[in-house]
Structure formats: C-alpha cells, structure tokens
Length: 320
Image (cartoon, rainbow, N blue to C red):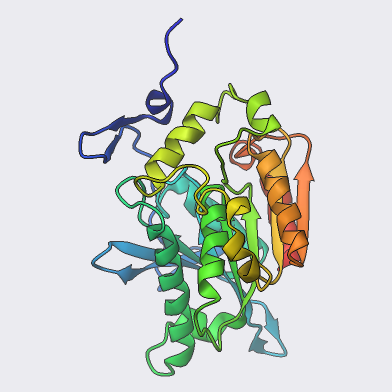
C-alpha cells in the first residue's frame, strides 16, 4: 500500500525555500465594477487595494437594489468576509468565494468586504491577522473621511454593525483578529459580532473526532497537520495559541470582552470536538455564544450542498 501524501491530496509541491507551487488553477470571476449592472443582477462588486507592498486587496459587494425606509436608503450591516482554503488556496476572485460573497450580500442583505489576505506558507501566521486588522481599520477610516471616504460604505453601510465572518481557516482568522482589534480605537466603527463557520483549530493531543475521522476522504488528519505546518510560525507546534486557543491562558481576559459569537459546525468534521470545546471555553468566559451544530454533514459541506449553504446563510442572517 502506498504511503498517503498530503501534498498530493492538496495539489501542491513543496519547494526548497519553503514556498509551494500550487498545481490547481481555480476558476476566477471579475468584479462587476460599480458603473453598470445587468438586469437581474442582485449584487454589484468592485476591487480596492488595501496594501500595495503586501499585495493585499479587498472586493466590496453591495446589493444592486438597496432596501429603503421612507425614501431614504436603509443602512446595511458591514460583513468582513475571510475565505476558506486551508491557509494556502483561493483568492477572493476565485469563483467559489465570489459566489459565496454574492449570496451573503444579497440574502442577508449586507455590504460585504471580502479580504484577499496573504496565503501561507509564503505568509506565516500572524500575517493574516494583521491583514484583517488593517482591513477593519481601513473600513473605520472610510467613516471618518467625509470627502474621499469609500462611497458604498459611507452611503450604505452601518458602521455600528460590523461583523467578522470567517469560514474554516477564515474562522480562525476572524477569532484571532477580533482579539487583536480589542486593542484598537475603532469608533465610530463597532464590531457587533464574530461568526465562525467550521473554524480551523488544532492541538497536539488528538480529539475523539480527529481519531474517528482520521481517514476522512476530504479532510484527513495528515492533511490538517500539513496545513498547520504551512501556516504556523517556524519553531512552533500545534499547541501554539494561533492553533489551539484552549492553551492560551493569558488571552482568557481578552476573550471575556469579545461580544457575541456564532459558531457553526458539523458532526462529520474531524474538527467538531475542538469546535465544541472552543464554544465551552467561550461560554466559561461569559461570551454570548450561539452554537449551531448539526450531527449530519462534513467540513466544507456547503460547497457541494446548496441547501446547507442556504441554511448557513440563514443562521448568519438571524445572528446579524
């Protein structure tokens, strides 16, 4: 029997300098631009550079028909979206991610700011957390700039209702970035909640769900370990606080100040035990948590099951 190769499973080749060559070319979709939109197009989108030096950027989404109250436009919540991809794959322009953001923007409805953060292993943690903090501070600055502030945010966004929403590794980024943002003066922007959809956490000690689902066809344990090797800073292990928040005693005081959290998970996800342990830790620290766990389903189920994707959006809509 041939030895399982996590790199082959991930479609990457590890280079000598520690970078990777990605063998899959995912289809991409361009933003619509804000000038014109086609009849029947529910959402318009445009791209904005965040940090030229770091090559980070954002794609902004807004509904093409804006809800109104008495002829004035109703302000929409602002959702900072942090995409899936195991730290190493996808861009905000990837069709899969773009369509998810279109759906989120249209269904909630909301202004979505999807961040194209730096991918690992070329960018190790906490680089992705810094990118997210920079994006949120950029959003705050649009509220303060009365002349040149980004029009979609200023005219249609409610800065007092900003949410961080992360999927898989994006859930990890959302949690750790929310803790970092507690040190920033964000007024008039307010983080009103953190949404963690199947968040990616780990640890050296294996959980029961990891052992039970070690050979999961989509997300087997050697692949999860390889992703952590790509993402974690050199010389650290899976009990580092970026990976295992349960080990992080000094952060407990900060976690108390987190505000509302929504955590979504599925029983067929090797990470489900960690996600439930994470929820218990939040509750112990007095955080208001909504936990939505379903026994049936696997990591990333919403990619292949449109009904699950719709159910997840409904949870987000109720929470927002």
